[in-house]
Amino acid sequence: MCGIVGYVGSRPALDVILDGLRRLEYRGYDSAGVAVLDGAGGLAVERKAGPLANLETRLAEVGTTQFNGTTGMGHTRWATHGGPTDRNAHPHRDNAGKVAVVHNGIIENFIALRAGLEADGVELTSDTDTEATAHLVARAYDEGPTAGDLAASVRAVSRRLEGAFTLLFTHADRPGEIVAARRSSPLVVGLGDGETFLGSDVAAFIEHTRDAVELGQDQVVTITADGYTVTDFAGEPVEVKPFRVTWDLAAAEKGGHDYFMLKEIEEQPTAIADTLRGHLIDRRIVLDEQRLADADLRDVDKVFVVACGTAYHSGLLAKYAIEHWTRLPVEVELASEFRYRDPVLDRQTLVVAISQSGETMDTLEAVRHAKEQKARVLAICNTNGAQIPRESDAVLYTHAGPEIGVAATKTFTSQIAATYLVGLALAQARGTKYPDEVAREFAELEAMPAAVASALEAVDATRELAYDLALSRAVLFLGRHVGYPVALEGALKLKELAYMHAEAFAAGELKHGPIALIEQGLPVVVVMPSPKGRAVLHAKLLSNIQEITARGARTVVIAEEGDETIRPFAHHLLEVPAVPTLLQPLVSTVPLQVLAAEIARARGYDVDKPRNLAKSVTVE
Ligand code: M6R
Image 1 (cartoon, helix red, strand yellow):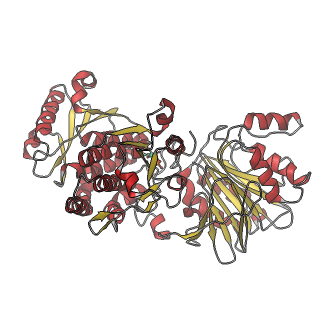
Image 2 (image 1 turned 30 degrees about the vertical axis):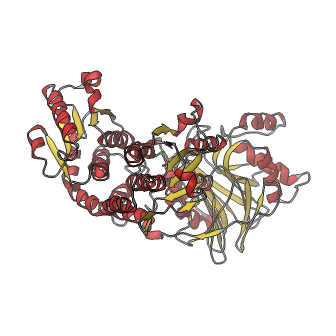
Image 3 (image 1 turned 180 degrees about the horizontal axis):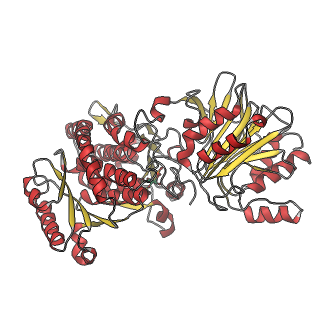
């Protein structure tokens, strides 16, 4: 949700910033903007509604001579307050044009701040919550106890702000310096040789350095070409821990694919293998970070899984595995609903928070609520050191690498693998599985990258089918047991990428209402259970298929290789390898991902940047 880049060094800042914005555009693409200090008191700003390409065109038209400096910052926006227009695009400036600001998050007390400024005669030129901060910092820098000190001015203003924010400020009189403040929104510092970077995530500067520092809550950082200093909002120095990014530039590039999403779909075998790697030691499951005693895990008597979107679907799958392996009751909750319904939580409750980004505000607030109620929290996250894992008692990272496509793909299947590891860790802690059983389940998981690779072989057949389905008005999805969350995920992918009406049902529910939707030619995607592993359910779904076919549905069936009984009833058959029942979602998801992406492409949409969405949702 909004991408931010900052640079201080010796290279032309504009080039570095535009490169960074290109890599961060998946965070928001409603508008983009840049600000560069020329070192002689000049502050050049350009901003443009629409994707980054519009800003680049604009810069080519107006010329970039005034952007001749080595300090600057940029922004790519997902609009919250104020529509996606030029005037609402960041950076925003104070009336004197000295201070520029870019912002990610929401400043909740903006109405009062704007009203106060207007009462003082300040002319506001946008509809945003952000602009007020530029005026406030300019004023704090000009007068009073913080005069002439940009970091102190930013700290003073930050103390007045409510909500979530990452804010970067420059002042025309202070070339060679950027000051940033952070609360509940991500910010990392990149450490180069004679140059320093700021980014919403490391993708902003991965091309230049893999050495980074993550800022904590309520901290202010000042960067110069020589390094950085961090304080809290009161000005007290703070120690921060540097880390090294484990992936490189190639991971954040398309690598010959037409779009990131297809690359990321194809990376799933590696992502799953990397997620599992090193987590079984001496027939014991080990997590990445555990700030919990083993006894705490053993004493868990109830599990809640909280997550949003695709991560929520991986949580639904976790329920099948965790309940089956541990006999613990598991409830799966949309993070956005969790804290508003007063769930029953105590010290023996384990809350598993699943988030690719680790910064989704709904999930973060659910974690905070759980902790206030004394529950233990275990995070499953794809982003090292993000806020959700930082605030959790235990962490298991998915090692899927950067996911640039807005639609979650490899992180979904990696999350499934990770939640199953959590299930096994709980089973071992509670003694519901012996070490050799844990090792056996782990071995089955370890066989999955090869199975997913084989599922990927059907990409071309799926692509052809996609072109066939692209003109449909709507698509329904059916599944049962673990096939039901897969159906939900397939429908979500189609909605977000192809903007088609897509809805998933547990197939058993058909006769309770949804069958009324079936009409001549309506495509219905059916995720079949295994005829061997779930024979009873297989037979029931076969009947459902006949019921809908009789009413005119056109069936697209995802079925296990060798399932001959399904052939006569499937208009289109997409086969996936036979795997153990609980692991079937890892393979049956693949054709649904490809289908959604290719239907979107056939309809002429940008697969990596679907409309109205952003990769990280850092607002509630
Ligand atoms: O970063 P998170 O996993 O917390 O994100 C949760 C959802 O916003 C995310 O999965 C979203 O639903 C995806 N765009 C779906 O493809």
